[in-house]
Length: 200
Image (cartoon, rainbow, N blue to C red; front, side):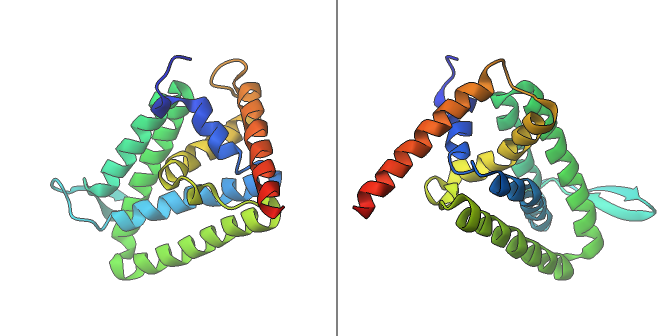
């Protein structure tokens, strides 16, 4: 497609897809990845503000939007996803923005003393679920053990694209799914061969 590797969606998706080929593991990630992102935004709500807070009211409860690391995190992810694919990336950016606003409201409502406990419990449950998905169903270590940054960057977008593909047949462009699946199959085969050599 003539794109640099940073914005090569096929490469990113094939890398992540090679670690998530089992349907049950994929479903587990669909359930748990976005809550991990949401609770990360929730705890980032309490980082120092870069600009004055904007007060708003929802359901009669006063809350604040804080322009801080949480917003910076949201913008970086959103822009990156739009660069990967304009349609799905724009949807992902809107979801990220919604999560940021919702987590800001929740953070203001809960307060730090309760919010961090909610975050810890949610993160433990979600990460445990994903490790079970890899250990029991995928039978392969998570992608983050091989490429931490790429795994964290791509996980929410991978889940969104998988959902759009599964339920709506969406592809960023015609033939994307078939091309990526061929790359995934190749990567899985190479990994299995390497694993077999180590066992021998």
